[in-house]
Image 1 (cartoon, rainbow, N blue to C red):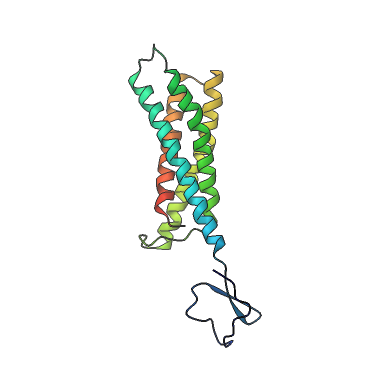
Image 2 (cartoon, rainbow, N blue to C red):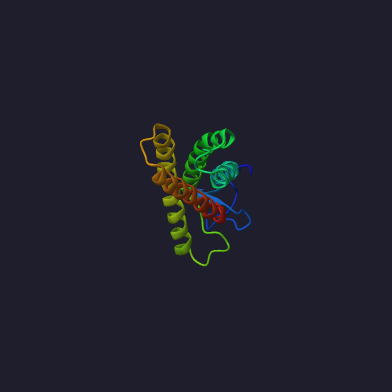
Length: 172
């Protein structure tokens, strides 16, 4: 949208045919929507990263479930694990940074429920950003017992998937 400076309109109020406007010293000016587009593209980037990360996690989870504990985890699943952790953290950070100007979507009955949903999504994303790197480093050094590693893995993965779904439901 091009910015017209100044619009030749009466100062009594904003023009009704321009969707997004603001006033500077009594002159009504059409606002640039690049900030909204940036948040929207930021949200979509985070969701795309999350989809790739979830696909990597699916390979890891299937490998963990289908192999015997005595056999260990296949090398290919380990590679996907090494890729999935940073992708998950990056997607969570990008989605968290897209919270700046999020509005309630059309499907939400109230702004209170939308804010509560965003709060839960943000808390789960922060949990993902904390749990998965701890899991990544703790698992590599064998400083955390295996049963605790499994709980952390599935907790971090569950937090990541649920926060991604909640972010996907909200309209930027």
